[in-house]
Image (cartoon, rainbow, N blue to C red; front, side):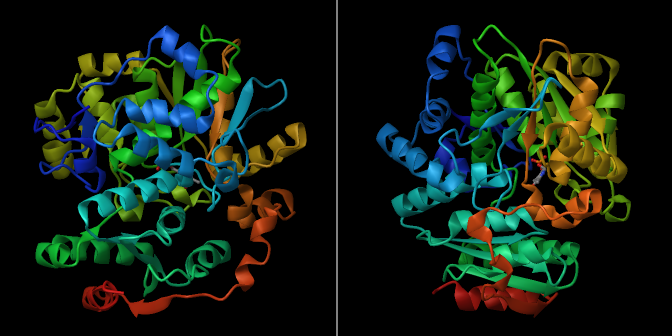
Length: 471
Ligand SMILES: *Cc1c(COP(=O)(O)O)cnc(C)c1O
């Protein structure tokens, strides 16, 4: 399999060439030349596989520059019951007779779905860097879930160091404890005196200094990384097999969305031939994506227009992976994608599909809906009262929107993107009680913390990286 850019650069690259990259050189995102189609016999064979075996089969269709035995070993090492809490890895449970099911993606080390991809990425990075004899210093900014997932994936990995910036004093106590309690020498937490945008701006400024970037081998692990998306495709298949008796059945998925990364993997699974009827995009008050599916207009927001909500990991103003879907929608017309994203959006902050383009959206199975703080609280309460199931605020957005789209005879699988204990304040607000915490995380907040407070200054961060990237 070879990869090309969404914006018309047809240079073909192999998987390991794009593994450590962010954007394509023309500013687009990488997509495979074509999606491999899974026939009925293959789907039937996959139904019986363990998660790691299924992951190997799917990844093998997209990766031809890692020897099969090595890829198998990497996948086997990643998806274990020890790391993800059960043999099923992503167990599906039914919500009574509501027609809804919940697929648990949040039983990895940081209790959010980002572990599903990031844990594999850590092993792939270590493997590829060793093969090249290279090192990589990952620089990132986080307001919570992404940073911790990256740190837990990269801790102790040879050839990789992580420098993670976060807004000092602004993450939840749980999130701070989760990140700052890591004692691994290759993990550096920098608490920036400022807000998330300040931290993000510093990362951008450092990445734009090409000489510094090259000298200190700076890389990222952001959500546009193709390998992350590919790892996520696997759990759509795994969820389907658990929710159905045989491959003649269809299911729908409802996905709490911000950057369109998670649900974009569902789109890829559907393009490969997984019998998915609908992909329901659930947003919070930051409803850029819901607006697009309702109106055909994609309008990014400024930071002043981006709401701080009680499902904070979906508080985005611009959906970084959305360009991948639009590229498929437009029949891979790179020139048109470049016009919409590289020109119209950059100039006007909005683009609108023409009538013919809009008519195609339905062919891709997408539906959408939105959820607010009040919806979140009432969904957490009703899901608890009716089904004795406690959901986190992001998953609650999914359950709320899923209930509006469920169809008789088609199981609706809601992806659980975090565990409630990560967002305890909202659970307390909804139910007046503490969410339970997995036993291994008891006393997390009391562990010694290792982090450095820095002013929001690019030069200070650069100096820190320069000083610590030889350790
Ligand atoms: C990242 C995240 C999301 C949003 O996922 P996208 O891929 O950005 O759409 C939803 N819920 C939780 C808990 C997350 O961490």
